[in-house]
Amino acid sequence: QVQLVESGGGLVQAGDSLRLSCAASGLTFRIYAMGWFRQAPGKAREFVGAISWNGGGTDYADSVKGRFAISRDNAKNTVYLQMNNLKPEDTAVYYCAAPKTPFGTTVAVTTANSWGQGTQVTVST
Image (tube, rainbow, N blue to C red):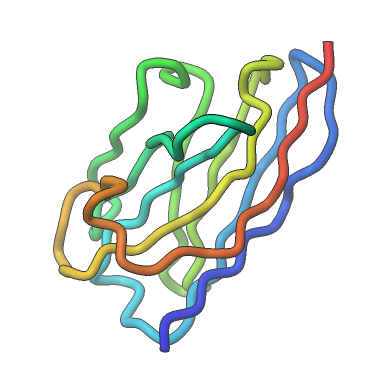
């Protein structure tokens, strides 16, 4: 059974940085693209970014390009989301997700098959 556990969220001020981690188990992590998503109160879950199965490519939502960066450590079965220059509009619960199909280059809400429980990020002004 696939298990994804996010950590690293918290309360920060605008302009600060946070690094989220997502530890995976129950899957052959190194062959799956991994994605990060977020959901703010009253809004739909949205794509933040993803990293390809081999780490050679990343994909980001326009709203976070240039501020967020995704990386992965296959030896630790962990994917990271480095968030810099945080803004109040980044406030949300952040989730990582794995797709059903391996060897992909990205993950969408519609192709995500396994989700973590989420970690809260709150950015104050």
